[in-house]
Length: 244
Image (cartoon, rainbow, N blue to C red; front, side):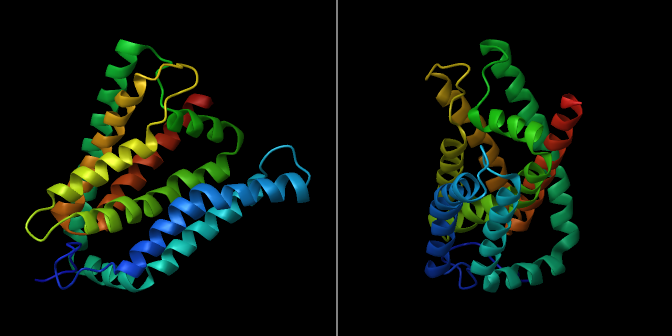
């Protein structure tokens, strides 16, 4: 049974160059830079709040989310059609991948904190905890709903596809995983030591590698989206329970 392929050289490759550039611009320029600045301007200058208003945050998250879906509306239809043909297999891989990812994350966090202490937390993780404590609803929308889909489209979708080759997924896996690690691994202010940066790069690169491997194995980003979603959902619930 044939299915939609993420391989760039395959005739069924689903992301065109135009869609790729649109996705990358929407994510890196819009969602990471322009939308947050717009949110701060609206909150501080129009609504006269002291910080970014959570309602504005939710609106911008939804704009980013549905904007991404619009950009990939054509390939998304193909992905859904493919998923319907193989949903049992993909679902099994999502469960297995989630279990493996959670075990790996727990092990790596334990190793990092054992050698460098409890303060050795990447800024990404620190930001998540702070956001959960102050704005749990917008945090849920961001961490659990928006981030898994958007990041998988960017890193395991267009980047993985365009960096791969017809004969091998290795280049796409390695480069997309490293970019994912670099993007997520800003060092924590509380530690204030630059040499922790490569440690966090490795931590997030491993996560990206596992997600990319499952994308290559199943030939669909729905697998990595599902794994990423369940991982973030479990992490969200865990932090909520710890906060009390």
